[in-house]
Length: 384
Ligand SMILES: *Cc1c(COP(=O)(O)O)cnc(C)c1O
Image (cartoon, rainbow, N blue to C red; front, side, top):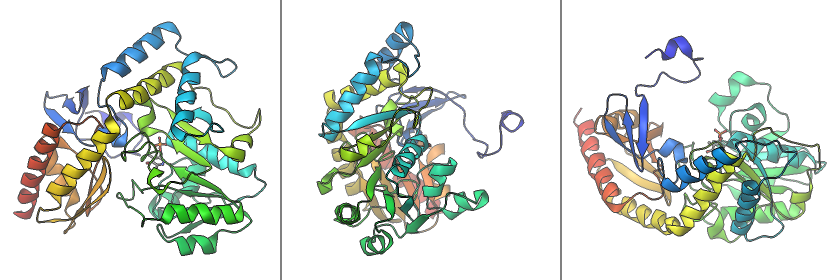
């Protein structure tokens, strides 16, 4: 592969070139087929080449491929209406962009319009790599090479409501939290944590922003990843699954937060592009039609029941189809490689975790196949 001669070295050189995808399967340049349990990192919610997405995108590119934000077009309207419906809040207003980092940048700019500037985020959180989003990201290795970052951003331990309460005051513009920390290795907060964040923000007037870039779009068995706690944030950010594989992000603001940005305050050329939003409409319609929220929950149950019995597995964390398989020993990279040889793609966010985020329409048969290969790979790694 000519990778090293062509690309900036910000990514490690990949060992596979993928050329084709269909459903939960991808094929590499050698013709080998893999069960894709990473799904473009929680992005391909409908799998590869879902007919609904292919049809919507093909039709849209032939009809109207791009217009500037000086003009409206039907698909952006339709998608914003669907998103408003999913929030269950008529005051919800959407800003479309192209990625998760951009959605969080938009939230950051929106928060500046409160006339406050302090921000509280959590240790280990991932909110993106652009300078603003990186300032929110709570991972030292990603931050340190790029200091100075934005001032007045404080990080507190994730899942610790008391620490959050101490850090947030009347000067805090926003609190940003992932409902489940994805990149950190699928870290689930204690029950009631998100609700406590809501009351801390209510008491101080800080905006509560839930970064649902990874946990949104049905991934956790509900639309946004925080719904089990029966509360609503002021701002939701989305990307990954939203475009079903096309670059599409969104910031949704509700209540008075929806009124903060004014004409001229923010914008993007491609945000809300007709083709990307057509894909988004197809994704939401298909998740509803194929009852994929329920499928994500039954898949979670199967994986948790089977995998938590395996020796070498300490726990299976997460919700729906965002799962972190905790390992007794730091062998995640080895295990990932063994799985790849066996035709299964996963990832290792750290040495004691395997993360899986397959398409929400994964079948029982495919789950069984994954379980069998996982067990076999685990034995191989133990025997090394
Ligand atoms: C992936 C991710 C982002 C960044 O999204 P990009 O599209 O890579 O910019 C932000 N927040 C969370 C929770 C993510 O998982």
